[in-house]
Length: 105
Image (tube, rainbow, N blue to C red; front, side, top):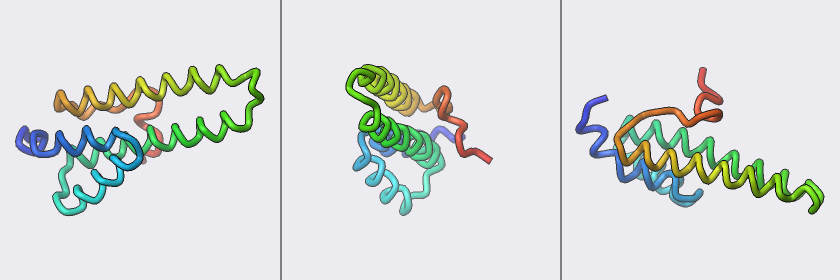
C-alpha cells in the first residue's frame, strides 16, 4: 500500500476503533475519501464491535457467578482494540489475532 494512502487514512483508521460511534464516523468519512487503509481498519474494527455486542449479550445470559468470564473476555476485546489502534498508528494493515480473518472470503 502506498505511504501517502496510509498517511491520509491513519486518523480515520484510529477513530474507527474508538467505540461504535467512532466506527460510524470513520465509515461515513471514508465513503467520501475511499481510502483503502481506512477501509481495512474499519473492517477490523467492525469485528471488534460485533464481538463487544456478543460479549454483552452472553454476559446478560450467564448467571452472576460466571460473570467473571464476561469480564475476562471484555479485557481481551479491549486488548484487540488497542492492538488495532497501535497497528493503525504505525501504518500497518495487519489482521487482528483470532477475529481478523472472520468473514473474509
